[in-house]
Length: 445
Image 1 (spheres, one colour):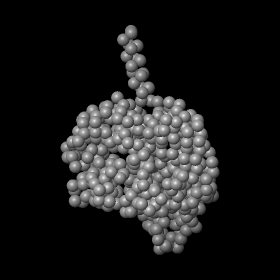
Image 2 (cartoon, one colour):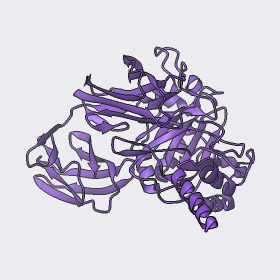
Image 3 (cartoon, one colour):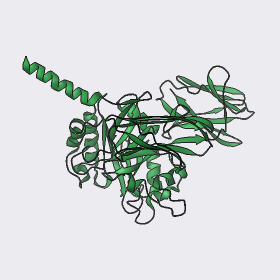
Image 4 (cartoon, helix red, strand yellow):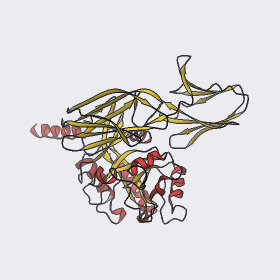
């Protein structure tokens, strides 16, 4: 009987280690790191099997990924890596990610790439520069991140300094790496000397890259998850691959130097990573720490510049304010604790009011007198109404840039699109007419 009770206690303790995720504004907070390495990268210790097991059972991360150096990968290693990653996954307690790191050392930079069936390499002449790897990522529906900016700028071409056309598949940038915090990868003068000391991150955002704040342990030493207390935190409904990917695609994540810190940043009830229409909006910031640490400072950034500072000196941050926003701006927050640890939210992007949002039939309608898109948000169906006197082309794209629907729509006609099988998240409705191309955002609940 004693043995039975002892085993029961052990099991309950193990369950509790995997089940206590903080909750903030309707989302659970999940902590982890997905840019890491095993001996499949040749310059790292430990097997992939050991890596996933260690991250899950010893470090008790909520999610963990391996992104092995592309130059050391073979097809056999890639196939094995995917099998091991899938076997390590535990729905509701641990999510595993499998990817690779495109490594153009001292030239174009390093990019971690996930969610692809295959891999490629800097050694492949079809993906040996930044433009080509971006095209490959788009073609293969990859989920990608800029790694340790500034470290591989030997030829002054790292990430081509963000001057190429942004792609939606690169969703984040590391603001910490290994055990090196924000002071190196975020608090810097970036690539340009003439932009008011903007760092790498803001230089990318200003040039149109819609990226969130991320960080990864980049572990090579077989102590995955214990090398530092730094984390990427995802806001998601559940700890499943589907829900965590949804958080990544929608930039609903933040970078934190404290492994227990919970943070929410909202404008007009839209969480970090989202877009809101310009105008006077409601701002809401909430933060707390599982260890009840005190928050000493909250900074609001607009286009990389500090515009407001609060000093809560409290264990629980709850700030509401109004904010006048203009299209093209972006906002994010930095919270600081008494011990100096910080977290930086992903941005909220402000869009021009190119279309008027109004409610005429008790469903949200996007309309500009020539076209109407309804309802928005949508569920099983979205309809496009062409009020103009011309035939238009209608395309629907996922946030990853994949075209999920395309058709022509005659003048003064309506087309219903079945969306029951579409995943939840943000979509872009592209309408091409004689007047040019217009892009509208719609969201599936």
